[in-house]
Length: 339
Picture 1 (cartoon, rainbow, N blue to C red):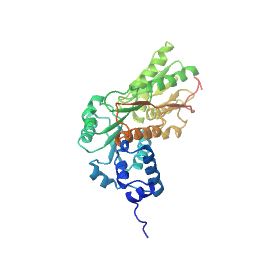
Picture 2 (picture 1 turned 45 degrees about the horizontal axis):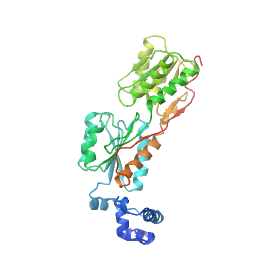
Picture 3 (picture 1 turned 120 degrees about the horizontal axis):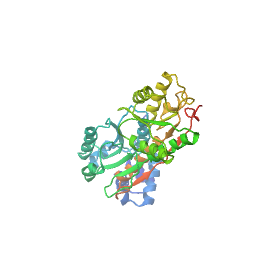
Picture 4 (picture 1 turned 120 degrees about the vertical axis):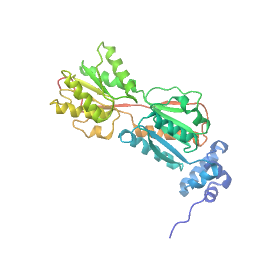
């Protein structure tokens, strides 16, 4: 026999408040409900297992109850973990989170912003490669909330755009410094175009200049494994290999490892390789890849929490900025020169 549906009235009775108060809290007007009352409502919802009717709420509040997670490449293993973590947070507040893959193209990013301004989404979280903060002004004025995931430091501002970021330049400086501490003196970098690559290049260059060494950059239009393989192959055609490579992401690092192996070079013994992102394949390749972990699941949860703060009325001020930590994960792809 099917269990009876839990209603707002049931929640109100359990919490000892009026049904109108429950409805007010569920509609996102949290600032009009006393904190102790809100806590009783939250406890009642958890105890009863109440799930609001998202479509009814959308009609009543004139909100879509849908948010977008914008990513430049859904095929990149970095992004699914971020998306899933954000979805888990959003669904607890009965919001649907849909993935939007832009390919990092300006016209695709602009289309997402226009759609949000026209009521398609109540909020957006994610990565924008080509849009500046001013590009979001009309969307914010239309009542749409935004949390950007950024690759360099942010400070917040007057416009209600929240940012979370990892200091990619500092992370790249530290992994390059690690190679220098091991004794490497010819360290190359392979990078793609766009995204966080420029900040990671800045950190690599800064570390080398601190000790008076010359940077050596090799690029490819694609920051995929194929791009990493192609950039490394061209580097090897130009002369003797470096003793170490810093790759702008793990996919490029894996491609570099493939090119080195094809050339008869042993990764970790002849050439050390470091990546970025700590995607799942980084621990599965052989040798296992040393990399920078950006903890994308943690980023996804934090971005979703900040987005809900705004959409549910718990925060309405200017833009906020939050720095997220990174970790350097040491594995077998890195060793002192000569292995």
